[in-house]
Amino acid sequence: MNWDLFEGLLSGVNKYSTAFGRIWLSLVFIFRLLVYVVAAERVWSDDHKDFDCNTRQPGCTNVCFDHFFPVSHIRLWALQLILVTCPSLLVIMHVAYREAKEQRHRAAGGDDGRCLYPNPGKKHGGLWWTYMLSLVFKAGVDMVFLYIFYHLYRNYTLPRLVKCELSPCPNMVDCFISRPTEKNIFTLFMVVTTCICILLSLIEATYLIGKRCRERVLAGSRDSQDCSLPSAEPVGMEGQVFHGVDYKPPTASIPPTASSPDAPPEEETLP
Image (tube, rainbow, N blue to C red; front, side, top):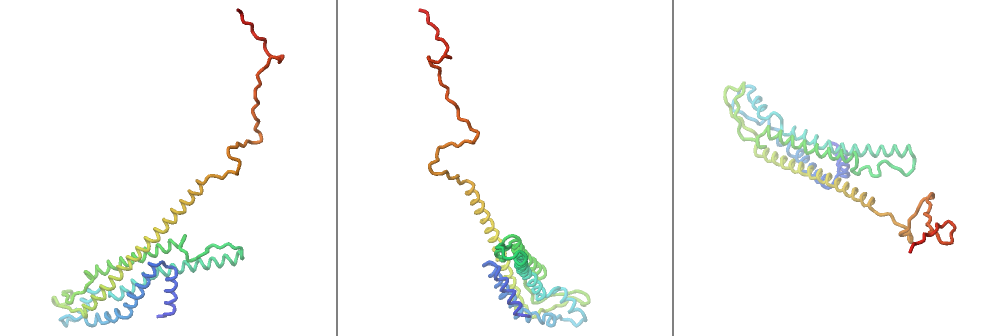
C-alpha cells in the first residue's frame, strides 16, 4: 500500500469535510481500516483450513464450508470499505474540477478581478449536492452490508458447531469452526463501528440541510426588510406636493361688483 498517496487523499478529504465528517473519517481509518489490515485478516486466514468435519468423505468438508460461509467476512469488509470511501474521493475530484476551471477562466480572461469560484472548496451549488449525495451513499452502503451480514450470519455471530447433511456427505456430520469466539468479537466490533458511521453520516446530512435552510430564511428576511424600508425625503420638503411641467394652477373666480358694466341689474322689491 502506498501510504504517501493514502495520506494525501486523507488530508484532502479532511480539508473539505465538516466536523462530523472528520470524526467519521477518523473512525473509518482507525477503527475499521487499521483493525481490518492488522488483525482481522489474520483471524480469518485459516477459516477454511481449520474447518473440520467428523467424516473422511471426499468433498464433504468443502461443500459444508461453502454452504455455511458463502462469502468470507474479510472479502465483504474489503468491498464495504472500498465502496464507503469512494464518495469522499468523488468530493475531492469535484473540488479539483472547480480549481482547474477557475485556472482556465483566469488564463482566458486575464486579471479582470472576476472569478467563477472565490472559494472552490465551499459547499455551495453543485458541490453541496455532491457532498450530500456522498453522505447518503455512504450511509446506504453501510446499511446494505449490515443487512447482508445479518442475512448470511444470523445475529452477526458464528456457532461453534454446525450440522451438515449435504451431498456427498454420507449422513449428517458435525463440523467445527475455528476460533468462533474471536471471530464473533471482531464481527460485533465492526458492526458497532458501522452503526456509528451511519449515525454520523445522517447527523452530518441533517446539519447541512438545516444550515442551508437557515441561510435561505435569513436571505429571505433581509430581502423583505430591504423592500419595506421607506424612501427618505429631503430635509425641509415635508408636506410639499410636486407637479409635472403640464400642470396648470386653478384660477380663482372673482364675484361681479356694482361698478362692473357686465353686472346684471338688481331687481326692485315691491312694498
